[in-house]
Amino acid sequence: MELVVQPLGRSFAVEAGDNLLEVLQANGVPVSYSCRAGRCGTCRCKLVEGKVLESAGDAKLTNPGGGSHVLACMSVLTESCVVEIPEPDEIVAHPARILKASVVAIEDLTHDIKRLVLKSAKPLSFSAGQYAILQFTPEHIRPYSMAGVADDDTLEFHIRKVPGGRVTGYVFDTLRLGDAVRVSGPMGTAYLRRKHEGPVLCIAGGTGLAPVLSIVRAATALKMTNPIHLYFGVRSSADIYGQAWLDELAQRNPNLHVHVVIATNEPGTRHRLGLVTDAVSADWSDLRGWRAYLCGAPPMVEAATLIAKARGIAMEHIYADAFYASPD
Ligand code: FES
Image 1: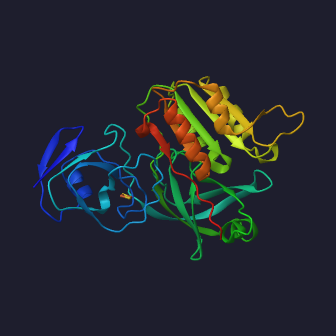
Image 2: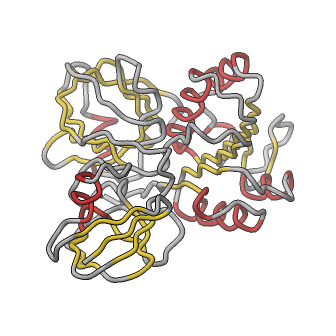
């Protein structure tokens, strides 16, 4: 049996029962991974020819593209295959860990969004744009994106209160300074592509601003010179937050252009009105050669994906880990 790896054009002898991720790693193939357990989606690759046996996983995969994609860590080889590794020069390999952290700040950003800052004894290695699972108690567990960069000595998250939400209710009403929080991760595939030199489109809805801030903070710290157009969509002006951070980033990074768009008509507002996706649509007719990072509620991410695609961004260059507002 043979495994062929594109676009590297390398091939290896394999045996039935081999795990795809382990084979790739044993042969020095650059492949992203984190959890090794089918949860983070980081090791996703494309099966071009052949079949694999997929062990069960519960990956939160929202990266558009569909097709015959598999999670390498959950794939058992049963016959000769051709697989395609995404962006071999943009590998992120942060082995998933579980860290003990404590709350060092919890403060209001808006009427229903809090900024939560955690400090852990050991640092969490992650790429800008990724997320982690926060466990406040054994019954209160949710994924949230990091808003900062890995070099920070704390971890920052933005948490919106879901009406009637059990976990976010706990964070808003019960969580206190000094409380312990378990952090597991990192996870997610919508991380900053550092080798890309062309323009970048970021669309954030609500607390989707957190991973977008992480991406822009990292790109600015790395002195990347890509033009970045950041669209921040909110329901009303009361939902806008992070303006001071965005202003400060725009001062440090002359290539950053921030567009705040509010959905509700407010007389006299200085902000742009309408849906954030309509604003992007109106501003750009041709986005060929761009990369897009889309972060927010699934309907927004789906609409934004369609626009990015229609304007010429290749599907594999549209990165999205949609946030799911859990009803409980
Ligand atoms: Fe495969 Fe996380 S490493 S899904």
